[in-house]
Length: 324
Image 1 (cartoon, rainbow, N blue to C red):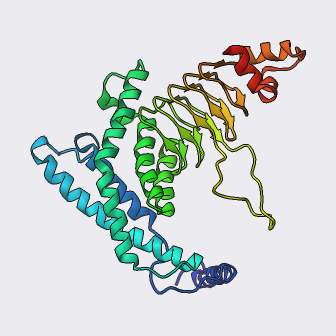
Image 2: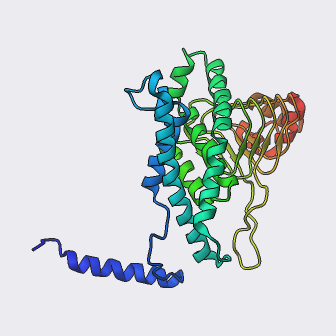
Image 3: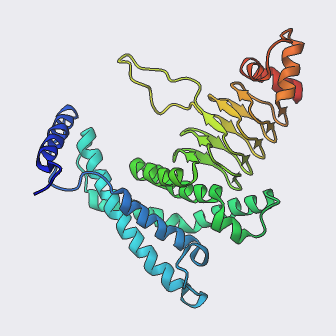
């Protein structure tokens, strides 16, 4: 007999679950209702090995058996993802009242489409790896970058998550993204569009929102936020979703540690955003925004007593014009 009064706790937990399900209009579907995070994580580890077999694959893998490993691992991972995709489609049908479909066939088609994208994803990730290698003087080899850089790991997850997002499997996409978030501290929404040659250096605390658009060769340091400025609500008081609310970062932009860029603003090509600044308006191409230039902008506007952080909040656009 248990000393922990297990039966009473089990009964109470069931009552709590039943209350929650009643509030959410849930009924027993007779099968697994949600995708399994553990299964997705397992499949994702396989896909990472498929993309970089001799670096992220098993320790005993050699060139001679590389293709066999890739083929076997890919088939296994895709089978798992097909099952999880089918579960998500069932879940969406039940929770939204969507029209009935052949979920098994649709899941198969979706995962087949993902598989066809893998060679292109590998090419895209190679540009990220090279950006990290060439952008970090401490990097001694591209192999070191692939094996150990958190920014590269986050981008591997993001490239796969974004593919799922575009294939209309947002729950699988979000789980893939959050697995990287938990490991790296880099939070990239799977909807974010990130061009080739992205380098996220150090990375901890980076946040990139759903509708953010990043061009080519963008470099981002730790604790950077590309977020939304406001969150409008509908007539019922619910947050409006799906509208473009995050920054556009054009090609060759560098954003240093702690910078916060909010709203649907554009950071022009080649701009350099200094550390710990606050941007809420467009920045011209080639501009250099820093704490010093923010202070100068405030002084020129007659606010010499303002602190640098306050200046960042008040005059981001003026800063960009002064420093351009």
